[in-house]
Length: 196
Image (cartoon, rainbow, N blue to C red; front, side):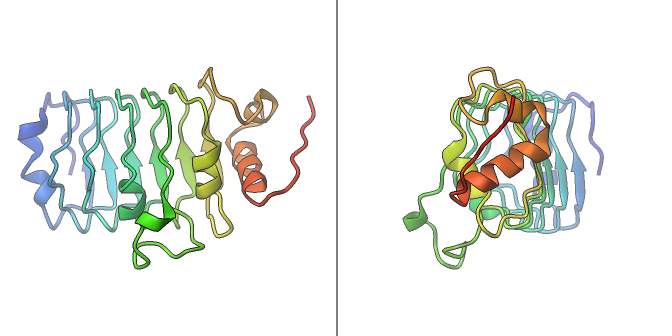
């Protein structure tokens, strides 16, 4: 379903966010400042809300089949911890061009065993993560969780975060695949060397 560039605001999309039949939803280039708190779209696989004015995300999104989520070009400052557990099939997450200052780290003791295994990654299917052009500073703790032993992550975009502590600029310049490998090595306790 495409509702792109129609000047929609939050109240106008409420019924769409309750549809059992929607598989793909394009809400990009509207005037959305927030998403409804009661999103329930069990068959949704793709959601594009890029180029809006979103400042925050709901704590819960009931979209267990969601594979692709584009939140780029908004004003999002935080990513709710609970979303890391509620989207188990997410493969592609684009949070580029926002105002993110930190990534959530999941407290293992607060996660139910049925939600996530003790040794599994936060997003077991996530292969692409774009966090470029935000205000991120320290992503190492969250990235170590995301790049754990069973991670499917292949690409992490971090360019344009001018205050970023890790990885070093030499790694960033090599591109998203090298950034991902850097954090996988870090999470596995491997000694990391890089050349200028």
